[in-house]
Image: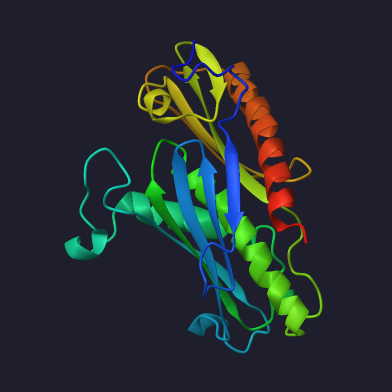
Length: 238
């Protein structure tokens, strides 16, 4: 029995509230159960120096966890003067994931920054961030197309991410904190709608697992991402 009482292939409740902030070109508050992440997309008519004059844009991500997102207060990384290795890893993951579904030439010479701020953490913050960042990006790109700034949609498909793991010997979907902190294996999958894999991170935490165990986790991830794709579609429909 999972601590939450969910079935092994059952996601937590997913909610996506769009237009959550006033000024960003795209924004949403995404919740996977008690994990909540504010995702905003900011459009700038500039590119990184190494891309200037190359006729393409850039999509990048930033990630942070607010001091009281967890059970005890954590210091702001700005106060410590540097980002943790975990933060840098997740930021790169967000950027890579979103770029995998964007035609940067169709975006033109502009940059879209996806800021993902965790306001409450209960496991799966990076996967919620990626899933919500796509919604914020979709809204921002929709605005560019409506204004005539771009004429061709640069987003090729939806992308979503979900965590899976082996908990007490059983593969389970969408780990919350009690499961994540005690799992024998922990995996994060980033999947495109249609089945392709953008990224897979899978680690044995307490016990090694076999190939069939990995495939079972992937099958669970596909079930979970289908749920997320449906929630994304509902969130961005006109």
